[in-house]
Image (cartoon, rainbow, N blue to C red; front, side):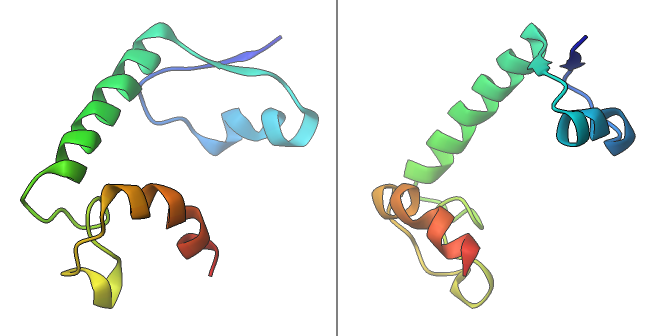
Amino acid sequence: MSITLYSVATDLKILEPVWRNGTPARLAPEARDLIKATAAQVQVAATGDKLVYGINTGFGKLASVRISPHAYACNLSLFLKI
């Protein structure tokens, strides 16, 4: 048995077997397509001239500070752990 994730919100109760029992989960094709389309929009925003909070700026007090796409990609996970 596996759980299929679609492009709609999924209740945590449905996902519980994944983290509790290791039940496999997979993305439905339409969910994959939506993720790809969203990633493309984020890429455009990240390299655009307009500041987009959390995409090409820092967070909180750094909301008006532009972060280069390279620095953001390399350091985002580090920043979120702190």
